[in-house]
Image 1 (cartoon, helix red, strand yellow):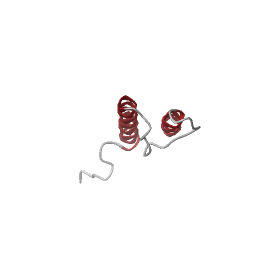
Image 2 (cartoon, one colour):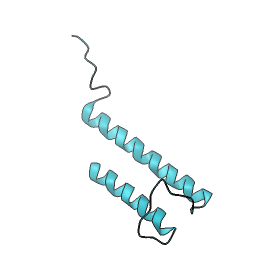
Image 3 (tube, rainbow, N blue to C red):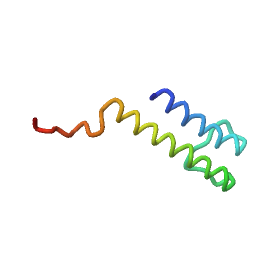
Image 4 (tube, rainbow, N blue to C red):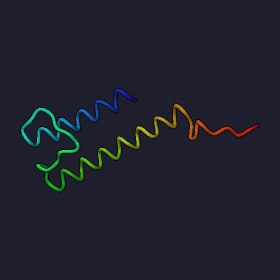
Length: 70
């Protein structure tokens, strides 16, 4: 998952940069994007964040620091 996650972020940065005529961009620099493009970038970032959290839950459990005391 980590590889897919990093690749997806790289693709998002490339798309942001391409909209400005550059080879890559940054999620923090979206002034050149239209409102629709900014919303789509935010949507992709949110989905990536959810995917990262779900991956963590899959590998570590819901609350890995919790011990039931049993």
